[in-house]
Image (cartoon, rainbow, N blue to C red; front, top):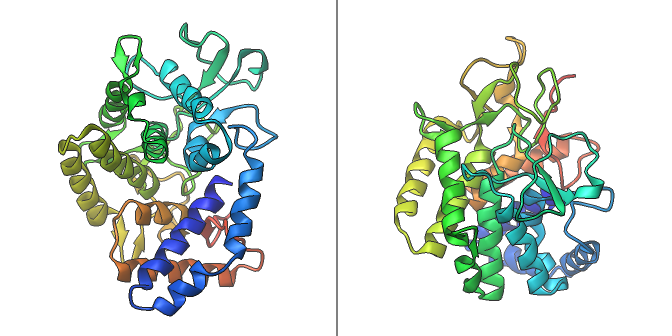
Length: 328
């Protein structure tokens, strides 16, 4: 659900941005009641906070994606308690866990994390990703915007306020997942906004085979988090960091009207003859639009790339992620 919703938002955003010059198109989209049906069906799925009924975990990236929907169907205090649970599981270095599950159901084989502040829960961290911290910042921002409950920012958890803990989460990324050469966020090689690496070993855990890189998804998510934390904290320093990140994304990742899939730091995991640069990353591109990295003209171009890719793929859905697919 998370990926389909984000792609859909990006396409809608592209169309509505173009609508400044084409009000007829914008009005047609806004008057399309099928979108209301889609939203109503989506809300019926949000019976809890997991990514789906087949999952026992609550993942922060999914929770962040549908939190506005959760606030529409659940009591706000129930949503707030789930947000605060992630802070109770926060690492001493500021890192945010990936997912949480009731302790008695923790049987998936992860290297589970436990915390005295949340004794009934077990958590785990997908270490190949660098979006957990950004996702929590965004989730808190959406919660505050939806409820006007700024009091959550001043709740103290183990001698630190939520606002201080959000800052620690952002600082963790800057310290532990940062390229000094490019001044951009780093992570393990995954496919677009995916959370599994192609190297040997368990795909969600960094190991000796991991190939480190820079990609648009992690950086766009971090940029959104910087911008939103700046507003929550009224600290304009983070807007300066956002501007610097945007400039470096444009310099190193945005090439010939599309995003470079990966800027490798220690070599590619793929064969030398593989032309990875030709692959379109729709997920990271959607997040880049939401991060405010693009002009209306560029958004129109990105949207057209997505539509063209979908037109070439017989079985494409609104959740198409990359085109063409990676070879087996």
